Image (cartoon, rainbow over all chains, first blue to last red; front, side):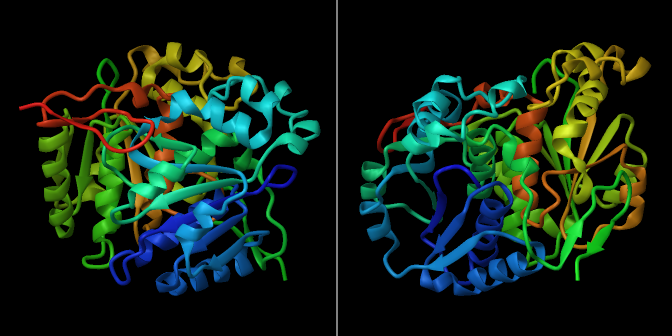
Length: 207
Length: 207
């Protein structure tokens, strides 16, 4: 998000046909919940098109890349790598460290918990600490993930150690990473905007 | 979860073929993140089988039902109905009220919403029903959701007003509903358990 080191979501192991919608949902979740960029495998170029289309219509900034060698991207990443896996360490235990590494040490020492009720401690994070933070690569696996990904990741993070959904894991991870601030993000551009309604649907035409 | 009024996740509008994995992920996310029960449409019986199999292997309690008339279930629900939709009110604004209605007034006054800066406005909204709390029905739409669902829902809740994923929306909703306590839930039964690891995979055989 604006004012922070970049967050990239890398979708690994896309299986054509079978994973089309899951990959699209991973990338749309990345966009909606505060990440800056999604990197998909060449086999997922259809998903990439869908997400670019949504960004055109609903605004950005959000970048979608199709990369030939996503594992190479992990190896050469200059920053923090967090791999989401049900075999990893509990998100509620490691998020403080992830935040410290990504946002800079002051952010991490806050505690990192999602239900921090005090908005007053948010405002000052993006200044000096942004200088000390590092770009974050969030790796979201599809099929079987090679051991080298576990090995290279600074953090193997589990959103529960139960089998569920890479989309759900990514959503909880990002909501806790940004401590809910991503929900107030304003998108720029696009040709429409949804206006929150108690009942029904309201869409504002921006053109 | 144990010690709370029941939370049921109802998946509406399953399209055979197209929605198989999404519906499975909705129900697995419900199980992993603290809900007690998933209700699926008859067309999604394959997803129901998958989720029952996961519960057999990784533990419960978690119930999966296949229901003929899911909309009837919404109409006749004796408790709180929350419908997740990108057109609804921001989750960070309404979660305090949802929690008060579901858990009872004491839960609401705990603090409620994840980043609600003003816990004081949560406690008194739920009225008499708050005394003991009420079962919560979380409705997750697939395709186009009929207007009567918006109308019947006590809360139309948006996890951002951006298009992304019903799985992601459900995950953030449940994590905020339980304020992270679902991540520490212990499952019973099953024949295996994943042991959190910094690197690699470790599965304990319980048989």
